[in-house]
Image (cartoon, rainbow, N blue to C red; front, side):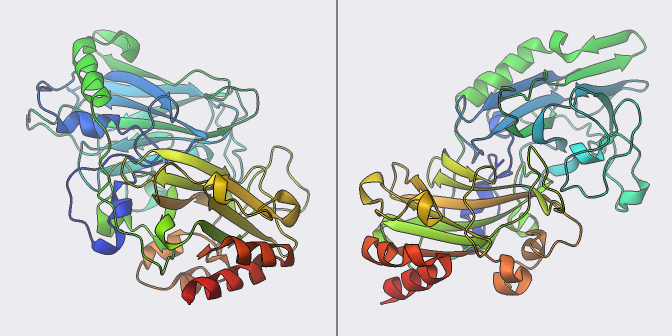
Length: 434
């Protein structure tokens, strides 16, 4: 998901996405903005339980509309002998993770534990290919994570099992810095399993010499209420970049842009679009193999999850998302997306012509974001390749997996859509370059 950002250095080329927290997943814009508001003096001593919501419940922060997000507050440091653990069960979903962040600031990501890296209570080892669904824990199996107050090891081989690192202790008192955050992300629950995938949200347990305290019974309840109230009164600010006629996808560089609350398992490509340059936007991208509810024999997952979402460019609200489940794939193994105002929908923007269409949002300018979660090791279409070299052409870093995007007009679209996405894209680019 993508979450709120603090005031950070923004490069013009990527400013719009510096508001994406994840795009990410997605975490609530809640904690970051709560920390930026006054009146929150007094650090939490035990913490606050997960506050869970979907895009329908709080549509701000560049969320994915198939995802559920939760955020919990944890102390900045712990007294000697104290510890915190997370207890949960594997939900019936495409992907879930637990991640840690340090206050409201750009580049505040600390650590991520994706489902495929979490061992279930019986200690079964998960699959080496994180793009595949976890094999170490079946839906309903229990797991326990321990929070460790130190930075994650630079060498992944030195990580301790089932540990989520939350950064070194912070003891300096600041009126606007009262906690660190833990996010819980769920993407694409199985049909009929509800937005939490058929399981309850994980529990956080604080332990010290006097015993254990469930975060749901926290003595910090009043402080938690103030944080939530401040969050409810806030909105994600999108610094925005102006669209232009030469529309193209660009990677979001989390390092250079100091993204706040990014999903550590995700990478993103974005394009800024405006109806003033064309009433139809067309995207063409090579299909990526993702896990299916019923796996296909002979296929290996290349990425765990993929979506293309539209966001209102000012309010950061999600309009709608195409997800990899249910997409129409053309015979050449490419996917073609089309977006336009309903009244400008081309007559050939139909499934029978291999077109995945959605209506444009209520604002002329939109941010289009391709979200990729957990690519397979060595996968040529791993967006991390583009993120690592943000100034290099996508055709160089991603090859055949570099997505194309263009404005188009209805006459051109209807004339070429029946001939396939490759000809359609070429015709749209030619028509809008005149």
